[in-house]
Amino acid sequence: MPSLYNRLTTKKRGDIHVLANFVNIYCRENHKEAAKQEFHIADEDLRTKLRGLILCSDCSRLLEHSIAKLSLCEYDPKPSCRRCKTHCYAPGYREKVRQVMRFSGTYLIKHGRLYLLLHYWK
Ligand SMILES: [Zn+2]
Image (cartoon, rainbow, N blue to C red; front, side, top):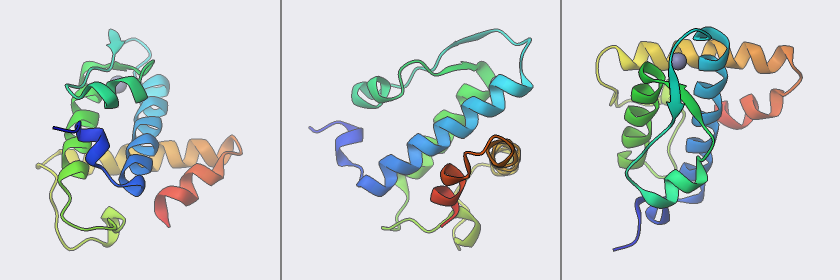
């Protein structure tokens, strides 16, 4: 049985990396006082790829949920969530992810790393 990561398309792998990056920035800048630990996910390959990601428990849960939803996304290629007809996120998570994207997107623009944002929203 190939790992979850190996079954993902290149596009979805890229989406997961960007998502992880965005959550990482959000948590680093907004949850400075929270207790944090390395992000843990069951899939071994994915865990290796995302090594070094340090998040608080709320952000870990959010990222885990988002990765699960992204992996199960029935569309290939996946449209940007904004344009998608299927709202697959659990209540509360969708708003939270939008908040993370908005914050980190603005952060990246301010820090001249716009290419990450363009990659995500294209
Ligand atoms: Zn956090």
